[in-house]
Image 1 (cartoon, rainbow, N blue to C red):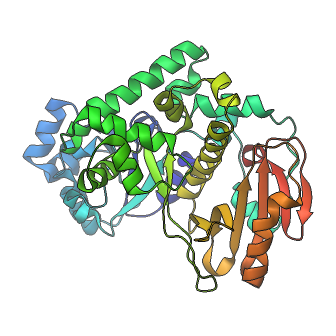
Image 2 (cartoon, rainbow, N blue to C red; image 1 turned 90 degrees about the vertical axis):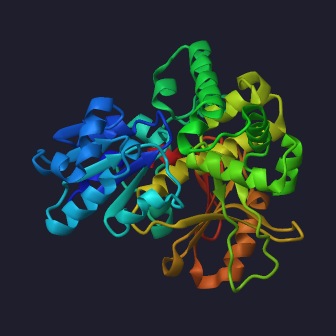
Length: 403
């Protein structure tokens, strides 16, 4: 999906800005679209660019990939000047680790960078599925195909715990995969933060992430997480920003609507890769299968992450959020809001035969929104797709990558 997005955006004179967490395949993907690669984490190449960025870029054959651009942030100014001087398409690709939008070094790129965010691989990418995105099919009312051979519940848990980092996906031996995920997590929490200019206490940061992981797909308050880690509010806020910038957590905002009152404003917490979640919580398939709470959190996080990655590469895709009334009587796991083009509502259930009761919150929202409601789905671990109510279907989770 990222390759198609890069090819499409390369027709613009703006530079492409490929970001994502470490080890998600940013450089590998970007290299496929470059004629010249400047490796800025190589001291010799970095020194030449740092000495005179404009001259260093002037005679290179485009498309030019500036990998690990953040090592020499001055190069962004040179890209800005080159783009402003010559409006030729597809000349520059910048790739590097996630950087916060708060980072002043990004400011010269305003209006001149087109972002391409690479998430851990989705099942759709791993299966090589090509076509219209699941949410678009659901929104437009096209028929979603019955999946040919969906996994059973255990199969879904296995897929989720494998995660989407390419190294983990390619490793067929479970013990070696778990060792890779453990090592990745340890590196991120103990070493990588310093590369972003922060020096957190690794033990406290680890406790904070552990608390965050245990609450994935939940609405844990800042106070709950901070108390669990033994830190204050200021430190908790800094850790949240840091982990988000590293690409290992994400936050799903609460949906808001002028038509509905008393909606909660709390964010849904998510670990950005379910393989990494398994490493943080220290679980295997058997442990998850024996706990309803862990199972529910894992499946919901897994599905939402699939759709987060999909929407990140769409043009004018939906805003993803969650819905919950303050009294807890109504709750919808995922809202995909296309604005004037309609609203989708999705529930995620660890059951193989959802019934009308499982869609009751979606039915309520449908009736409240009227024409704005486009479609609803209860995604489940069973094998069959069928109608639950008007505009609402029960759909196997595997339709996300077989649709």
